[in-house]
Length: 421
Image (cartoon, rainbow, N blue to C red; front, side):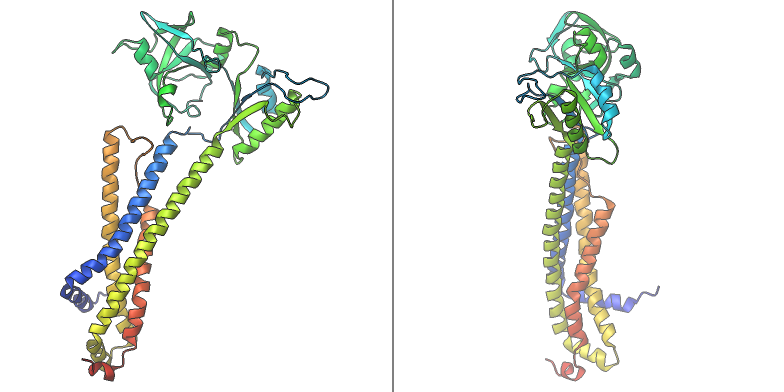
């Protein structure tokens, strides 16, 4: 590839003769890319922060009994109390094709509002107790920081093991005391601590870290809940939306428990994927808004470049006429104007992108030093594809901005241009 050094020298000379004008023109383009980078980075930081508070498996549905029947059905009266049975888990798993994963969950104190009493040596406190199964840490947004989580052996053998939140550890154990392997009693029943967790949930992190988790079957047998299940945790089969499994399970439960399908107040549910979809839609809107604002700013800068290039063509009319009189082709004249405009926009945009990324990296380092996030705001970042797209938009903007001035320069009449004052 041969570089036309004379043409580049000419471009630098022209730009150097009008330093202020060139700087102001370039600043408009710089600011557009800079704002695009910051807006997209900030949007991604907010998305990262919010997503960290979601379970790592977001397509989850919880189903529970919400109230008594309000409609008679198949000869049965209203006001019947419906309860989930342990065998319902296997029945749903077998008869509802859209369900890929289902577990029953029980708790102590969460629905009654009276948390059980926990004691370790001379320290005590009241904490909510909830059942858990192996490999459910992601569903419950738990991160183990000491020891281990509940495993399949705990489930199968109904072991009296527990994992405790960080705030439970602070209240029940002395500073520096190792809780792993220690015994605690909950309402007079002894359990062994096998792990300590912190919560990744946004908003209710403190409440979650004041919980104690026990293998669900152990909880049922220890706290007189053998005959019933409090709620179901459900995940659809791959490729299906959680809404499908939610509707199918509630329909099947209505058949199983002989509840009128129109009696919608009996079974309550919470579909996490619906909430996740709403948030994803919000962040998509933020990205679109960022692109619209930034591209508008970039186009404004590009129009400024185009106006400046029109002035340049006007100032250099005699020079362009002389070039054409000496044999310069319209293509070479057009290339000279386009190259100068694209050079200004590319360089200005590149610096806008670099400085924007550096600022985002600086914010990310500060957040990392402060624990990784600030409220709902996580690590801001701009991926390579976005940066590349921004540069492409920039170059195209510079190219489009130069077409009118280039066409005007290419159409200069040499005779009239040489007479121009």
